Amino acid sequence: MNPKASLWKAFLHLGVYKYSAEVLAFLGSIIISRLLTPSEYGLIAMIAVGYLFIARFSNPGYTDMVVREADSTDHRGEIQWIFTLHGMLLCLMMLIVAYPLSWFYHEPGIVAPAMVYGAILFLYALPGASESFLMKRKELVLIFKTELWGTVMGLVLTVGLAYFGWSYWSLILPHLVIPLFYMAVYQYCEPIPWKMPTLKSLKNVALKMRSLVTQISKVNLVEYWEDQADNFWIGRLQGSAVLGVYNRAFLVSHLPRALFKPLINSILLPEWQDYPNHTHQINRTYGVLITVILSLCILPMVVVMLFPEPISVWLWGKNWAGVAPFLGVLALVMGFQVVCSTSRIMFVLARKERLYTRYAWIQGTVIILVVTVTAFISIDILVQALVLAVLLVKVPSFAFWCLRISLNLTWKEIGGLLGFPWLLHLMTWLFLVLDLSQFLVLSLGALAGWSLVNLYRKRRIFTSDG
Image (cartoon, rainbow, N blue to C red; front, side, top):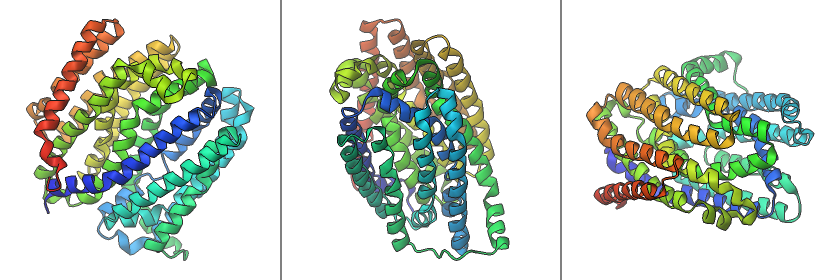
């Protein structure tokens, strides 16, 4: 096995499907934004506070366990039922939180759509076991092709419903169809019997999963609040219209993470499941991956930060010009958000889930507190503080807990990977907050130069032989 060559080959062969799906989804959001109002988007964002919290636990390490453990194929039926029963539990939880969400936001209109999201959570759990075993077999092309067609199906349905006046329901109803499509394809390619296992065998598999699932669930809890604390407080204090505008900026600033994270998580675990036998080589390849990701993200970041208002108007129309002030600041941490999101797989591969939990809770709690305090000052201060917290808390925590403690990289190696771009990001944030446009252009130019130099040095990985 050559971890380096196989990794880049997988990215090149599979990225086209994943990126096509994400780009289509993003283009679809541009079209739909012209058919819906900020308030309609804001209402869905209110529901998302509860939905995304519960969805964080939709797969709390089940797939990781299936791929990582050699004997998982002996328990296919039990794992199928664990996914199914787990989906029922998620559905029940969503039904329970529907009314409290409505009360919290003073918005009775979110009760019915929130309940429909409960059914969606159950449906998305059904294909989980088959997909996990397909990943174990490295059938990633099949999975990514299926997701691409699911995205096309959802996009057509959403745009059609929005065009014919279904308002925010156009964002919800397609998700009742997409998971059924996934289930049909995955069950055809990786059939798993639905025969109910004995309670004893089901309990034995659940106990085997417990350690990994418990730690990942703890991480999912804090990561949810870390991601949603800003939406939670903006929706509560500013209302649905302001939340809808902020949500558009959040979408663009997190687009690279939406593009890279699923691809990385889907590829790294099955490709590197033999991690203990190739630790040094895989760690070195991971360092190259971090540099490439950061370099690729910096170029769009520079463009967005220099032209936030024209980009906002071009993407969504004049009604969304208010996105620009948020977008110009949030874009600064595009790359580092992606880099830090790759840590989960490396902790799992190194079998250091407890260390991952400690890392996630320490840095996540600090960011949540920063967002909560600044939300009561102003939304502008919140956005600036959030970006600074990512740079001063999230990135150093990633460097220490993941790179230094878990992967045993030296501080010299870590500095070579992250030091220079991290300092330039901090300088850029300072120039942005102080409105020193002439210096801002210089720091952004330096970041773009660093990015281009690294991409040129690593240009061979974009060829078929890596």
